[in-house]
Length: 76
Ligand SMILES: [Zn+2]
Image 1 (tube, rainbow, N blue to C red):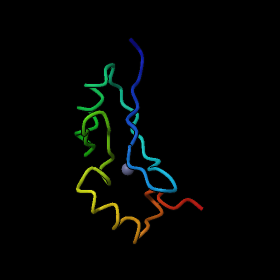
Image 2 (image 1 turned 90 degrees about the vertical axis):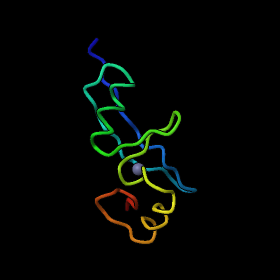
Image 3 (image 1 turned 180 degrees about the vertical axis):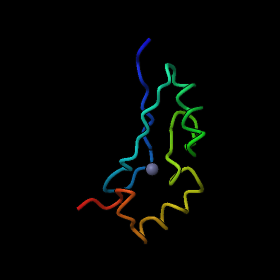
């Protein structure tokens, strides 16, 4: 098995979605999620969230109000 699994952040907004993703060396989804967890990623049900969006949903509003270019939140 040489497959790689990429975790994609599932946080979505009305006009877009989080572009963050994490390429893992894992061979299975479970391993990929364990790998991501060490990086702060969280899994809820079948959805994965990057470290920025893994917390309470209220944090999303903070991100929207204070865009950080490094997050890719507001590409221009
Ligand atoms: Zn995200």
